[in-house]
Length: 226
Image (cartoon, rainbow, N blue to C red):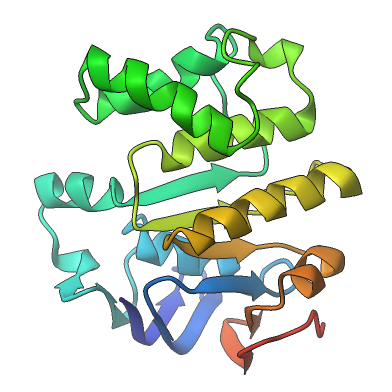
């Protein structure tokens, strides 16, 4: 489904962010991407989203070279990937319902579709009773679950979760990972980056370790090995 072929990224100051990375990620996999700060994790994700261009190599999503897509096609392509961030990125002046509806409106969905789908996706992330709460009325774990609901509302093929548990206590981190696993069980590919050893070890899925821009480990059922 996703292919990195000999991907390198060298910035103008000669910093090597990625060094000949080759990876295949299959539909429905749950991938944990680990590595110390500066190992290349964020650059790798930006390559997939076509936010950065490789110095060498190619990135394919199915049969499409993502860096050769035209502007209109890039927009359509990015809608197939949902993103979840460490800092939630919710709109503070909008309710839970409105934050998720906003993502649907941007994708051209009708009011009827929004009214039908938002309550359903909030039930999936165990927030059916928080429909009309504003972000300041939610805990950190609840905010992250809203962010996950927003990421999956348009039924993407892939979810990128970039340090989604970084600001959460262990209990809320466990809840968020449980929801990501549930989404993965429904067939969505998950790419997770994290420094949390407990999170990695609890998932028991493929772990890819980056170090200085290179893949140094790729374990089918890995543990946190840094």
